[in-house]
Length: 377
Image (cartoon, rainbow, N blue to C red):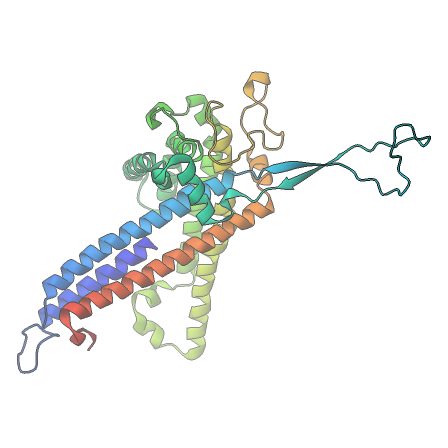
């Protein structure tokens, strides 16, 4: 979504520049003399695009990163309530000396599940602020910046070694993710744990822990590449390239052919969405939960989290593996949590759309305020 915003603002700036050079905003009787302040328009649009990019990035990191990760690992707690039985017998013995024998009934114990903290974005943010302060919304940001910088640098190197065609680029992306798996796990641990006095670089997972997440990291990276290349492959298989690059080719088709091209385009879009929902999302959840299972015992989690995954994980000190398996990581993520996560992503998408509408409207308003209504003609 941020890439779309950047593209729209860039197109707006380019269009304004071309119009300025061609004298599209000239006053009546003044040929090729631009009307208004095109330089001011360019500055306003650039500043607006920067704020737009920051806003979109903040939404994606806070809600799509921090809140989503907490949603993936939270285990809803249950409160035990003890209820003493009440006798319904009208002739229940009132005195200890009564001839009738008193019957004793064991008290009943009920467990009431509490509402998950991550059930709403507002409650999640409120909990984070209460537990770790106002800057907790951006927890793990330093690690994320280091990770993305290292990811880009390493990806460039591996792409140069493997090649720039489709398959070598995919292999380079998968290898990059696996090599940096410990750094990515560190980000997850910083996000899900309570505030610690240790600096983030002193909490780096061990090499042994890194070995345990190589497979789930590779599966997640492969899933992400599938979500990219399945739609791309269908795009070229349906021969949509010519219509995307030149709208005139589409306009020259018959109505039946146009309908076929539209259906093919819809199939390409749906293939990406289905792959993301059925492959990438489970792989990402599984990876995050496997990473969370390796969190050090000395660190508490900021949201309720069952380290045993329902008794499926045993600590290494008692002969267990100390890490949840990929299958158990996904199976213990129940349907209520899955619907909660999908709902969160739907809210994030709505926030992105609202942010785009807001900033596009702001950009149009700025241009009209500076150049007047002539910009619309």
